[in-house]
Image (cartoon, rainbow, N blue to C red):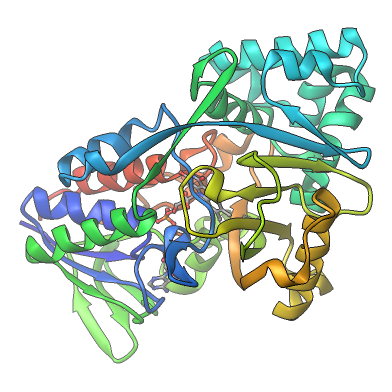
Length: 428
Ligand SMILES: Cc1cc2nc3c(=O)[nH]c(=O)nc-3n(C[C@H](O)[C@H](O)[C@H](O)COP(=O)(O)OP(=O)(O)OC[C@H]3O[C@@H](n4cnc5c(N)ncnc54)[C@H](O)[C@@H]3O)c2cc1C
C-alpha cells in the first residue's frame, strides 16, 4: 500500500493516521509540538490533567462516539445535566431554557418570543444553503430585531471577531446554535458530555492504537517542506530528515500552507493565505471556591473583554473548581503580547465581578495557554472560496478546522475529515 505522511498530530491528523493504518498503509506522523493533541492537548493543573482549552461533547458528535467505540473506550464517555448563566447589567441570570428566557428582564416579551423561535427553529433546521450568503449579524437582526441583536449578540461577536464581526456567515452561526441546542435531555435540560480523564484519554488511546499498528509519530518535529515532482507529492522534509511519501495528509492551520508547499500554484497559495484566523489566550484557574453553579456563563458587560467563562468542573468533576477564561483576539492587537501575569490578573477581576466573594487566596493555580490559529473567520459565501481538500498536486490532501464549514471547530468534525482523507488515499 502507500507510504503516507501525516502532518500534524492534532485530532484530525491522528484520526487520519489511525484510519490509514487500518486500511493497511505505512504511516509516519510529524508534529511540531512536543506533545500530541493540538487544540485538544492536555496540561497539568495542580494534580489534575485537563485540556489546555476546555472541551465538551455534544449529543450529535457521532464520529467521536464511533471512534471511542473503536478504541474500546466508549465507557469513558459521561453525560451531565448542565446549565448556563448570563452575566449582564451587573447581575448573573439563569439562561438556556424557556423559563429562564421568560424571566429575563432585559428583553421585551416580543423579543423573547423572537429569540425563542430563533433557537427552536435553528435546532430543527437542516438546510443551510439559504444562510450561506448572509452575515450572522443580518440574519440574527432579522430574527431578534436590532435592539435584540444589540442586547444578546453584538458583544459576543465583537469580543471574538473584532473587525471581522460583520464578516461572519449566518450558516456558521446556525450550526453553533444547532449543535448545543440538540444536546438536551429535554426542553428544560441541557446535557453535555466529557471523557473521563479529559481529552488526554482520547489522544493517548489514538497514539497507542497508531503505534500498536506500526505507525511512527515524531513529536517536536515540525514539517518544513512538502516536496513534489511533476505534479505528484514525493516526500516531506522535517528539518534535516526527508521521508519519501506517496500520499501526504496535511492538517496544519491553512495560513501556514504557502510556506510549507512552495510548489503550489500561486492562486492556491493565495486562497489558503487569505483565510483569517483569530488567536486565543485562555487562562485556566484552579480555585478553592466555585464561581457559579453553571458550566457556561455568557458575559455582556461593556467593560469586560471576554465573551464568557467556563466552569469546567461543573461538567467534569475535579478536586478543585476549574475555570477557563478565554480571550479571543486578532494576533496583531497589542493585548496579544500581554504577559501571562497580566492576563491572569485581568481574568481574576472578571471572575470577581461575577462572584464578588472570590479572594486572591482562593486561586490555587493559574496558567495561560495561547493559540495563534484558534478560530477561523468564515465570512458569507465562504464555502465557494475554500480550496478542494485534494489539491492539484497528486497525493496531497490539505484541510484544517475550517474545511468542515459550516460546522464550527470540533473534535467530532476533525475526526470525520481526518478519516475521510485517509479513505481518499489512492494507492500508487
Ligand atoms: C478554545 C477552544 C475550545 C474548544 N472547545 C471545543 C469543545 O468544547 N468541543 C469540541 O469538540 N471541540 C472544541 N474545540 C475544537 C477542537 O479542539 C478542534 O476542532 C480540534 O482539536 C482540531 O483538531 P485538528 O487536528 O483539526 O487541528 P489542530 O488541533 O490545530 O492540529 C493541528 C496540529 O498541527 C501541528 N502543526 C502545525 N504546524 C506544523 C508543522 N509545520 N509540522 C507538524 N505539525 C504542525 C500543530 O502543532 C497541531 O498539533 C475547541 C477549540 C478551542 C481553541
